[in-house]
Amino acid sequence: MIIQKSINRLLDTCPDEEITDFVKDLWKCLAVEIISIVGQDGYDALYARAQFLAKRSSAESRKGGGLGIENLLPDTVSESANTASQFRETNRQLLIIFTELLSTLIGEQLTTRLLEVAWKNLMNHRVKG
Image (cartoon, rainbow, N blue to C red):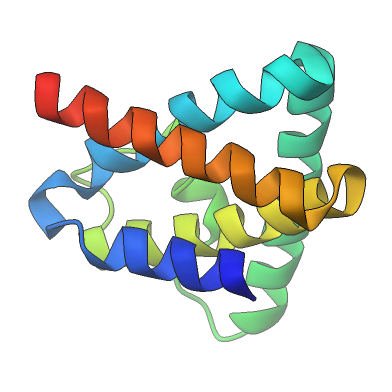
């Protein structure tokens, strides 16, 4: 629950006009830290599983239509095709699922520490960039 609150706070503080770049940078920083623990193959498998679960969850929750998560993920994003709020909410869902999976593998304490380091690096990158 602490991780989920941190993700919500992090995404909610980003202005709409910066959310696409912010989320892409966030995933890059997370990848660097997580790959150091589980390796590239581990990260890729974890991300693919999170995408699968998020897509399934998205499909179940939007029986009446609308944009699916497959159109809003960081690796397939198109700013013109999606609103900032849709992009933010979809990535919120994906990040929560991803970190929950990671936490089951390496524990909540290590997951929290990895996220803290990644977010610190993200903020340093954005200040310098």
